[in-house]
Image 1 (cartoon, rainbow, N blue to C red):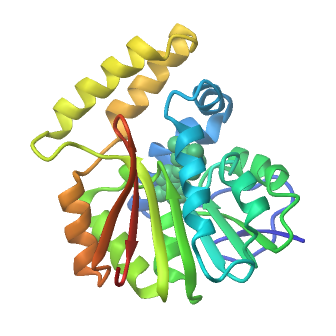
Image 2 (image 1 turned 90 degrees about the horizontal axis):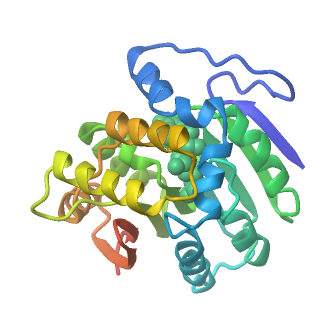
Length: 260
Ligand SMILES: C[S@@+](CC[C@H](N)C(=O)[O-])C[C@H]1O[C@@H](n2cnc3c(N)ncnc32)[C@H](O)[C@@H]1O
């Protein structure tokens, strides 16, 4: 059973959606996700060629989820779910009782509905801002998942994200964070130089104009942190355990929890 609803009003959405932009912060989020809102096909092309190591990363995420003792009975909130193309197969094998995906891209959510169609548990897809979603949820979640989305937030927003995660995670809950991470002694400019070089050298199957569109998106909207900053923010939110699960080039999978 699918519910597809607007985050602020809770109104069901089954057809065309208008996203209201109530304040500047939401406007910033909307701008940073415009590339995903216009069309999902460029990101799909990038992941189909495994340029961001989705295959290895999501195999690792499935392995992690398999370790949980609340199999079949856990609640998972996916923040910046996109079309859930890579998480959906993991969840089919390890079904949560409740899955909620939040994203600002209507195009992505429309696809997510298809990818998640075979999940046995309840599925909710919400069109809205992920920070607002995690700060306003009244539920307690066993797993918070976020894949390649948090780097769009500014540092103060990331700190708020961790505070909210610490509040709404169950005692044995996990925050699984997949994202680009800077080296300890690397500033944003140097990270972006390296990442754009990596894109231009390795992403050879992406047509030139689309590659440049992706590079512009990264330059304008990516604000990755280094691991120590993420650990500090998590610790300040009561998430005292930080584990590096995997690293594929700049792409990291991190696991945060209240205790080890
Ligand atoms: C690079 S895609 C990642 C999709 C998927 N999680 C994955 O791992 O492949 C980033 C997604 O996060 C969403 N996103 C980024 N910032 C967001 C925000 N503030 N609120 C909601 N969604 C956001 C984008 O719309 C996009 O669908």
